[in-house]
Image (cartoon, rainbow, N blue to C red; front, side):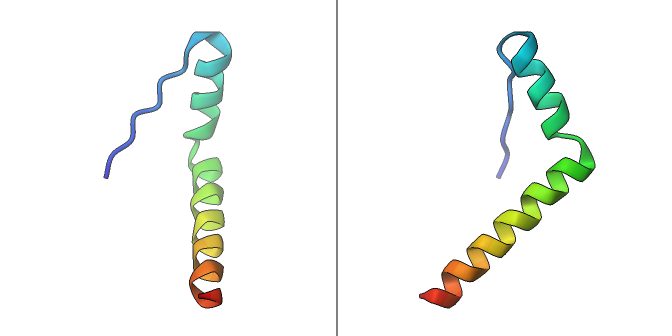
Length: 43
């Protein structure tokens, strides 16, 4: 799967740049993993 993030304007570009920083992105992926795991366990 592949996503493309496009910032519209200066604020959007700044958001995308920060979002794609390795630490920030890693935190987001870990949060998704935890939420998905909890949902699967709950049935």
